[in-house]
Length: 302
Image (cartoon, rainbow, N blue to C red):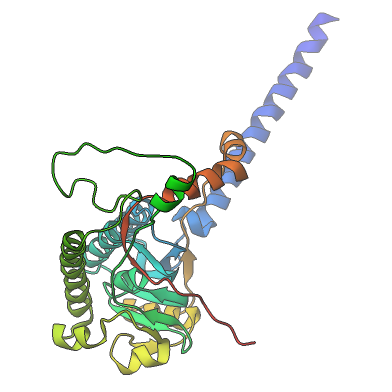
């Protein structure tokens, strides 16, 4: 009786191996034709979204490098919906875009808002496409200081600071800015503003004088920006895709490749609670930052 079981076990084993093999083949086939896998033969354009306030540049820079090295990616589109953000982060992305255009075409597609640092990054590309009503421009530097010394007095809190130099605690929320403090900060802002002007002039092929005329923080519509030479073409995201195809010499259909989304782990979901987010917002509000950021509100057709 035991001997009769062996053929059945062998058959089941063979069937199991066959199922596993077919599963692997199907997975390989699906991966081959998956746009995000980079394995199919169709023409590809990489799309990198830059959303919200620009705080960190690491992921965007890494994605630019990845698309730049991938020979199957023929061009790159930066889809920007951002009011700007940190100076350092904006400059790091700008620099990587400038390096990327040496080998591949980079087109910036501006969404609802692409102002200040958002425009700073866009200006590094080969071409900029914006909607007529896109809020852009805002070429300027913003530095904010929160003052809490009066509140501290009312609740009986006193902070004593020992420092190595007069300006070591410049910008502290526990004391007002002195006139000498303000002079130093204005000098810093002027220097970083000139960096912004130079970057836009270099990226757009404009003179510094022309950029400086509108580098007073003013916000512009996409249509106004085009008239001033800050935008190349008016259109939506699909128009940017068509432009990228033309510049890369692509005919026919194209596959858009987006960065793979990272899945949040349960640990992250637990600790990203509302209480922690609120605490972080309070702490961050006390920090002094210098930013390429538009501090206004968006608008809509009512």
